[in-house]
Length: 127
Image 1: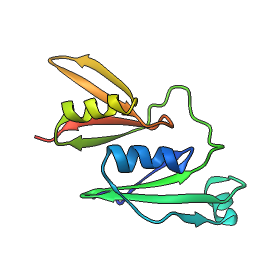
Image 2: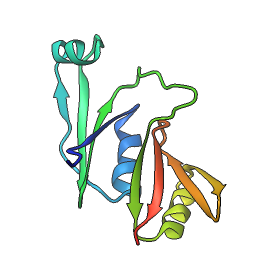
Image 3: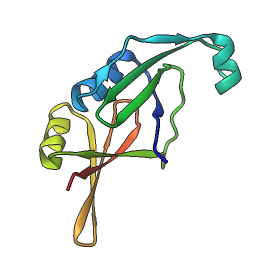
Image 4: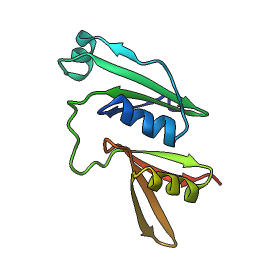
């Protein structure tokens, strides 16, 4: 089994671009619209949604732009991504003022970063 894509919500196209294109280095596809009737049937939302696909080697994020989305106060859902240089990636995230959390676990450290809309990403360095 493999993952076809991960669907997440961002409050604006600018926030999505900053995280997925500028930080993760993914390629942005042309935004598309999901009609209100489909949005209602799929997600019980009474609005049209913009969908932007960001892709890269082995990665595909389907980002729904919805400024009305309500975020959970304490999200548990997250996506784990592997990066070539964890330290360099964290430094870039800090420079872009992304929220970073690092927690000791045994002999190592768990690293997480949040996009501007609170979507949580666990970070692992490729071995």
